[in-house]
Amino acid sequence: MTKKGLLIVVSGPSGVGKGTVLKKLRADNPGIVPSISATTRTPRKEDKEGVTYFFKTKDDFERMIENGEFMEWAVYNGNYYGTPIRYVNDNISKGRDVLLEIDVQGALKLMEKYPNAVYIFIAPESTDVLRERLRRRGSETPEEIEKRVAASEWELSQKEKYDYVVINKIVKDAADEILNIINNAKGEIDHDD
Ligand code: 5GP
Image 1 (cartoon, rainbow, N blue to C red):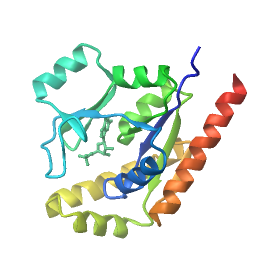
Image 2: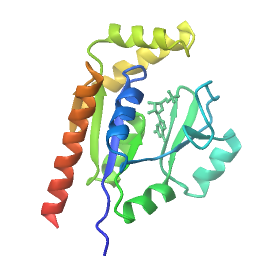
Image 3: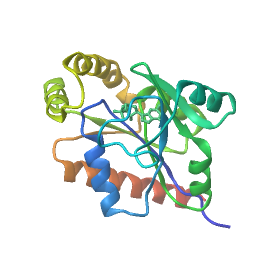
């Protein structure tokens, strides 16, 4: 029987640099499979259907909820986001480690259902650094940026519920730290078997 893969769940406020850290992690570890979420938000210019997200209408997304197609889903900033369960389960059962980059509400839901997953929160050095990153990214309006900064306060208040908190100061260091966490978690799971 194939050993099951590890479910890795990463959250962090918008603008914390999750994307960059996880890109580095994946570049160094091509064996980690990123899950592709479905969302109803409008695509940004760097988005690609089926690569960054599966873009859905509200009706389609709600149908998927009814059909039980999501491992978890949440409403973030007025849009639906969800993790299609099939792709994750297929990969895990084939022994591949799967990485979910999801918001805090979604991660909290999974903590009850999947206690064997490893939960990692990526935190900013400060709220000012977060706001500055969002400004530089230039993909949100000033109002949208303030909404995301406001949301980050609640998100940060939940970080102790995660197994690990990684502060993103230097991308390479944060990616290395996450890799260590994953390797340790795998060692523990192997040991438990
Ligand atoms: P963005 O609009 O910037 O791509 O994502 C907004 C937030 O939604 C981020 O915190 C991102 O991690 C989260 N997110 C992306 N996919 C999912 C998902 O499938 N489920 C949940 N709960 N959150 C998601």
